[in-house]
Image (cartoon, rainbow, N blue to C red; front, top):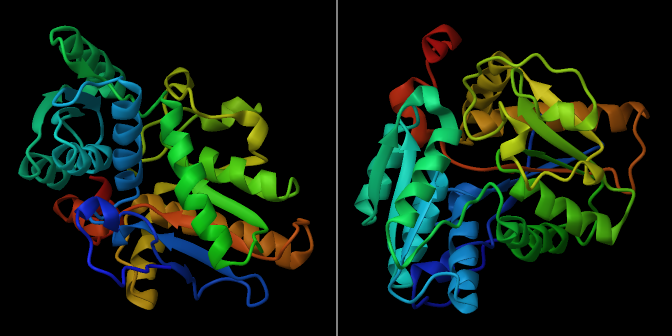
Length: 326
């Protein structure tokens, strides 16, 4: 739970210790709990890796004091890294595909970062390539590279997962979380499986994403509106460890959108499409447990709500599905 009872010397000290809240929709006998990452100072789960990765990189000498970090990002990681970079005395540059949230890009700039856009059609691959080109031009620059850096996974193994298990006294039966870089789920999964190897682990992706192929499942690659999770090319998702995952659940944009609107209207959660997808998948798992179709060590499901809907208001996230996807 959030336990900031003493004055903090830096905003970095307010990262983590976010609330774990039971969702009201789902089987009565199989509670679903969501980790509310909007309570971080940058309003997303990426604040965790921003602080953790940069502190470890400075300790190891991967980036020199006063150096520059350059990261390809859809936005939230940039915000998390920008917060940490400024407090740790580093410069920051972020390479962002044009189609991603304008709000996120404005916040990165407000935090002192330089934002460079790449063409939407080039996707994250284009942003990654451009980030490495820029880093090669500077003597003191490093690319944290959230898609391949094990520190991403380690951040959640060391912070997010222990918080969940502490709050539930270790009674975690299933972990369900969206996969973008896959760092969040991999970190929590590794910790959970160390506590109990029978813990059920589910990755969540949008329909149109191809993460499921890594578990031998058929996927039809297509465009999707849900942001922050999913992949069109699993070669860029180096952190995903198939052996830690029991299933990959694909959630349609329509279902994710309907659920994010329900979460706001009925439960007071102002969360984005990735949280909507995670909630849908969590309820599916909870219903299987309740029906006796899935055996787990404890009849509880834990998920993660990564960020806030406020980042996506300009994209009509609370309008009709047709308006949102147009």
